[in-house]
Length: 95
Image (cartoon, rainbow, N blue to C red; front, side, top):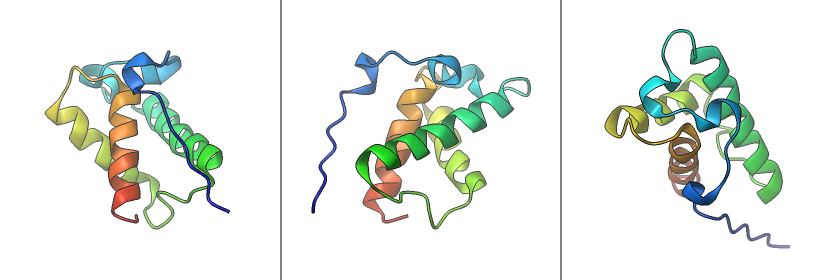
């Protein structure tokens, strides 16, 4: 059985909590724990919805590192947008 998940562009999705933060401040010292937890929840939620295992071969620090790299390149992104891009990249490279 194949499951196809079609997500709306993240710019059109209401994000709550840490996901609504911009990358410019998502990983500031005071925000890091919340952003870390939010990204882990995002990956878990999308994996659940799509019956996938993206990130299973990487630990949380690797996953967060992928998101942080995107945030460094584009600090104006919301955390949800950076997480979605990192998720897509990791899915496409079977990580």
